[in-house]
Image (cartoon, rainbow, N blue to C red; front, top):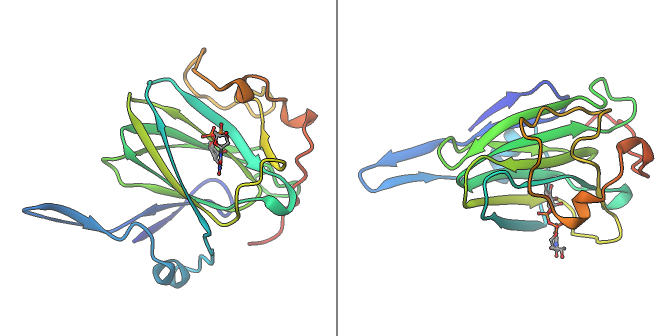
Length: 186
Ligand SMILES: Cc1cn([C@H]2C[C@H](O)[C@@H](COP(=O)(O)OP(=O)(O)O[C@H]3O[C@@H](C)C(=O)[C@@H](O)[C@H]3O)O2)c(=O)[nH]c1=O
């Protein structure tokens, strides 16, 4: 497994070791032991799986606030997405900065996102399956969505009119939200 630093403090790209043979391939998609050896201590408690039928579907930018915050280990197992992560931890050296990484069934890449970040993705193909682990349970009251095109964050999604949910359509800007993460060294 390769752990690659990103431009966001504490966010990593993980490249699992993929063993190919005459049948196909095998990989460990997550190993607590390997992660701990790499200095990454996360205890995941929920696995999520979602499907988007159309290219140009955008989910985000999401998080759960306060004690319900979630770290996530994310991957795309069918099709491809542009995955976006935004640091919203006040006091962080990378506060309000974002990164965009292509995740696909072909490149096997994963992203590890600690608590205190917004997350979203845009489907780059039809028929996208997306899987992620979370280190805290779903909490509808703490669930928050921030406007995907918030000008204060200014993510370059490369699309003007994505397909979004009703919830994401109505999402506020970060400056009008009650998200209150404070940077603490992970
Ligand atoms: C996220 C989630 C949703 N749900 C329900 C609530 C709702 O009725 C339905 C669809 O939820 P959403 O519209 O929030 O699904 P979605 O827009 O796919 O939300 C996800 O987006 C990505 C970008 C993330 O980072 C995730 O953490 C999550 O917020 O599923 C759960 O039961 N458990 C969960 O963990």
